[in-house]
Length: 392
Image (cartoon, rainbow, N blue to C red):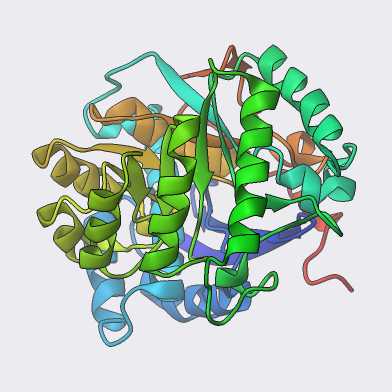
C-alpha cells in the first residue's frame, strides 16, 4: 500500500473554520483526521501540510513512526505551533488508514479499550449562545431569565458537568476573551473590580440556573496574568467549581496559582509533546492535564497520558470541534486508564451531523466507545464543499 495524495480541506463552521487532513492510498483506502485551529492559522497549517506531503506520498502509510521521525526531522528548527498541528493531523489520518486496513478501531492498535462508556461534559455551555447564537440557531442568552431557561435545558440533557467561559450580560452580551484578542481587556489582561463583579454574576447565575448537582468548570483561557487568576479563583470558591481551566506557559506561575486557590486546576491544552509537558508534571503544577489529541497526534498524546499517570494525574482531551475530532478524542479516552472526563460541544452549526458519516450517540452524558475500523468517522465532502472556507 502506498500514499498517493495528502490534502487539507476546510469548512466554514460559523465563528471558525473546521480543518481536515485527507490521505488517499493506491488501494482506495482513505484516511481522515481533523486538526482545526480556530484561534490560529488554518492557512499556515495547510501550508505546512503541503510542505510535508512529499515525505508521505509514495510511502507505506502504516510505517507511522518512520514517517513521524522524518516530519519532525524536516521541521526540527520550528517545533510546535502550526507545524505540530499539521504533523498531528497527518499522523492521525495515517492511524485511520492503518485501522481500516486491519479492520480494527484505532484504540485496538494501542492495546484496546479499558472502559465501555466515556463520561462527557458540555463545553462552551451558555457562552456559545451569547456569542454565536445565530450560528447555532438558538435563542441568545441576554439576561438571567434567559440563563435560567437555558439551565432547565442543561438539567434535562442528562449531562452531569459543563464548562463555560466568561459571559458578560451587562450592556451588549459578549464573551470576555482578551487573551485571544476577541474582546476588550487587552493587552494588559487585568482583573479589575468591575470585571470581577461580572464574572461573579455569570458564574453565580450559571450555578443558580443548573443547581448544585451539575459540576461547573470555568475556562479562563489566557485572559489574565497570575495575579488575576488568583483573584478570580479565590472569589469563585463559594460556587464549588469542578475546576478552573487556566492557560499559561510558565509552570511555576501555574503552581503558584494552584497553591493559592482551593479549586482544582486544569491546564496544558496548548502544549505540544512530552518535552513541553514535562516541567508541568515535575512541578505538579495542575490537578488535571488537558491534552489536545488532534494537535499532538495520537501516539504522543498516549505518551503524555502515560507520563501524567506516573505523577498521579488524570487527563482530559481538549475537544471542541466536529464529530471527527470527537471520535479521535473518544479513542484516546477509551484507551487511557487515567481519564477525568471528555469535552464535547453540544451547540454548533445545524448542519454538523450532515458533514460526518457517523454521529456520536450521547445518552445521559455518556458516550459509547467507538468500535468501527479506524476512527469510525469520515467526512462527507459534498457537504464540506457546500460550506467553503474562506468564503467566496
